[in-house]
Length: 241
Image 1: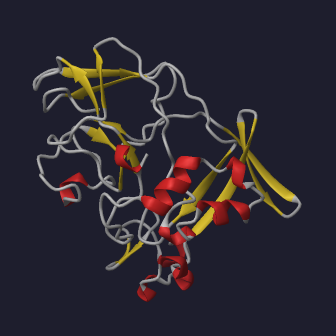
Image 2: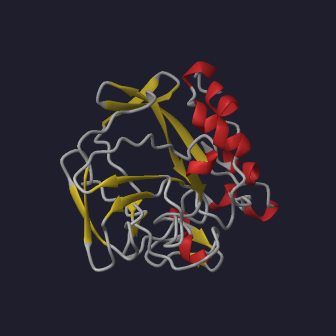
Image 3: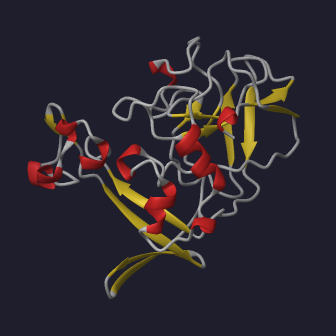
C-alpha cells in the first residue's frame, strides 16, 4: 500500500505510474483521508479513533499501514502537506497539449465517519508568523491564539482541533454531550490532478500537496462530486492522474 501513495506530495512528471488505463475506461480508486493518521493526532489511527468509540476492525487497514510504515519521504509535519496522494494513473496516448477529462461516476464512503479539523497557521482564519491574516481581528483567529503550542515543535501539543463526525445516512453528526449538530453531506474529491511539477525529487517544494497548480491538486471544489467533469491540461506523456 505505501508504495502506491505519496504523503504530503503529488507525483511529478518523472513519476512511475502505478497502473495505466485507456481513454474512456473506468477505474476505481480507494482514496484515503489524512485525518486520524496525522502527527498532531498521534500518527496512530487505532488509538485516535478508539477514543471516539471506533473499533479496530472499523479502522481502514491502509490508514494503519500508512501511519506505521510510510517511508517514501521523511515526514516533516510543519513543512509537508497532509494529504495521502494515490497514483499516478497513466492514460495511454495522452500527450502534452491534450486535455484530460475526469468524470466522477460514483462515490462510496469507505467508513461511516470522518473528522473536521482546524489547525493553527492554516485556513482562512489562521494566525501566521507575521500575525493575523488580512481582514480578520486577533480575537477572530481560529483555533484561538491562547491554545497555539507550535513553539513546542511537538505536533500533539500544538492545540489543533479535530472533531470526530459520524455519518448517519446522508448527514454528518457531531456530538457534544447531549447536544448534537447534524448537517447534510455531499461527497466530492478535494484533491484531483495531473503531474505538473518538473522536479526530480519526491519531496520537492513544487510538489507539495497543499497549493493547487494549473495541473489541479488540492482544489477543494465542492462541485466535483458524482456527475461532474473536471478538465486538466496534460503536461507529460500519460498525463499521470
